[in-house]
Length: 390
Image (tube, rainbow, N blue to C red; front, side, top):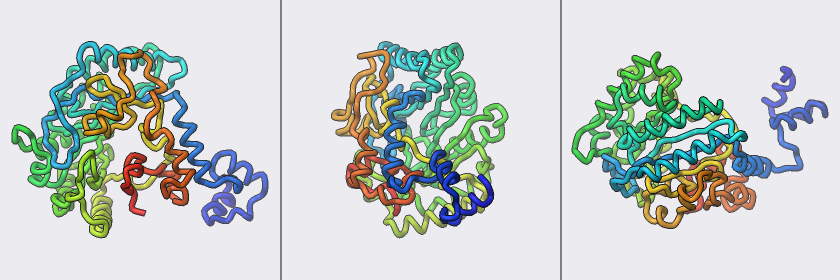
């Protein structure tokens, strides 16, 4: 853009621009035609994106077992792992996408339960996925959400090299004993320092895993809020302000059961969040509070080319449905062993999200942040919660 055009946009005054410039800005999506509401334009883009199959996303839950008993977790854990039959069907489904000429990229997200309790199953499946991706020249990457208790640097490097792991999310809920009390191991073993130790080693040896992004998630509750500032200092002192570490502060909400007793009131939460974020920035830690792109689609639950496959081979649209009563009984969309190609997945509860926004079933249509937020979480809106502070 020319300096004059950029200045006009910055000042929100496009009256000085000529017809040609305005037409060009509308064409590239920087301006919206006056005859269209911003909301309608964005909702249309969300709906269109959810039907595009060039990117396929699999959220794979190779086990329903977890070795932790977190106070706020709504999951019911049981000792199930992918059986040989289910693992074969999952493999067929992912390979079918990798071998599809219309697919440019496949994204596999390892989830649970605790996925590392099925570590060897993950490596076996990943070996097939990576080999097929290389043969078909399809972009492939994986990520993992883990409690971190079973992770070591050697395992992390193996997953990076053999499973194309490029993002991992691990939760630390407060400093020291605050974390150990919130995220209790069934064995009673404390995990705060072991998790910090492998994170430190990952930063020290980052040249061996240079493309890995590590997300440190902090679930905020009334029980750990007083320790968050001390946690930030401790992470900083252990060298975890590295650019490969991304910090997320997430207030606990209802994950399948009532967590209201653990939630800070909004006034206290907003003040604390402001203080924590300021301190994190001062310490040079990396956060992702500022949006960097238009949100489309808003999440996997609104995207028919994304699916969740639990340890039984059942298909879901939302990652918060498996293992949680009553969702795991009523929100099953199908089974991976009914067909080798699972896309577009069967219709789910949140596929009509763009229409809900346009029809003002939620208050997002008049929100100036809608283009970069997308509505945050359709599930929470539909269940009467408000997933944003506005």
